[in-house]
Image (cartoon, rainbow, N blue to C red; front, top):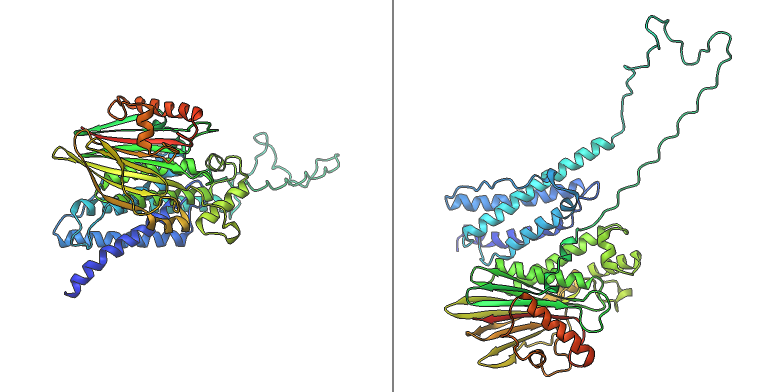
Amino acid sequence: MRDDERRDAADLPELLEILGEVSERVGALSLSRRSPAGSEEIEELRERLLFARHLLEGLFALRAEAVPDPEPGIAFEALGPGLRRTLPQRLAAQLEDERNAVTERSLQELSSFAAFGLHARVVELLRLVDWVTKLAAEEARRAAPPTVVSLRHAPRAAAKGSARPAPPDAAPAGRPPEAAPPAPRPAPPAAPREDPGPDLSAYDLRIDEAGERVDVAGASAWFASAAGPRAEGPGLAASFAVAFPGGIALAVATGAESSLGSRLAAVVAARTFCRAAAAGPSDPLAAVRTAQGHLEMLLAALMTAGDSSDALTRVRGTMASDGARRVLAHTRAPDPALRRVPPALACGLVGAIATVSGGRVEAKVVRLGPGTVQARRGGAPSPVPFARSPEPAFLAPGTLGAGGLARAEAVPAVTLARGDALLLATPAVGRGAPSAWTSLATLWPPFPDGLGDGASARKLLDRAARWGVAEPPSFGGPLGIGVLLAR
């Protein structure tokens, strides 16, 4: 192999590694603070982005292709406070989606579509870096004290033609001099503005808690979530589905009961997995890594949020701010004194990427942590076999979460003919029964063929919650399902 060929093969892993560092640093930025980052950190970020752009534009030149000139995106200055707060995290997530979609091993093999996508994200982030630099410069100018006091506009005499005003220390004739007024006290410095943290309002729109249906040619998917029987407060289950050309991505997540912010983690994990899987349907494990990366960015944003911010208040619940911050720090880097405390933002995830071709559906299934996956093929339902026990690991950010990614397991594609079905469910569906499928079919015999609109999936979970109150062994805990039916 020639030296230039070896260099080409090494460039792509190096580029992807650099872009991974860039996404982490951008995701940790907070535009709510007066200084989002130090000047040295911003310059390092700029250098990495310039190097990435150099590699990509060199690839275009090698292929004799014109260097793309993407249209400038939305003006950052025009963004409102809510959108501005989450801008770095959203741009970092877009870069991660593009990066995780790359399956080639060298720059020479990189498709033009992937190269254009990476180049567009790099150019947009360079624009963000320039804007952050401009914001820092403007803040420095506003904070700088005046260096010259101008006397050009000194007070004039009250009436025209009057004599020159007496000096301030001279008193009128016949009147004793008055005492000089006391010098005004300097105003106390303004308190620094509290970081409001990430905008979590989008995660309040829980279409899974109402039930939803997604259709493509040859397949349909239903997903729904419920708090479960005897639940106090919001439930810990989440489900989601995204249609893409020729297929559907489907996921169900369960927040760990003892983990701080686990309800939010389940929603983030299910949505991110489906969106990443729809963008790159060939690799379900890459979609799991993308979901873990989004939890990492959420953790970084929460750690910089103010004590009274809406974001931290939602996550910590009744826990004191100091205690919540200690758990978040323990999640980032384990604290030996908290070895019995689970990481924050932890959840279990099961996901499937189904593609329709030639009248058949092939579903690639992945699992990390607790969850149930069953398939009905030829009339009889059976569990999809995973080699490992689902209990020891969870999807989570931080050191423990990064180590747990190694326990994510994908099984060979499950082939479904017309009328066959795949069920993803939380462990609470069918707890104490032979299987989740048996529990749902016993509760409602038309399952799953009788499902109609999206609300029908939610009605099924309402039945399960009522049954779980009457017969606790059958359904217990947060309920979430995702059903795929080949048509």
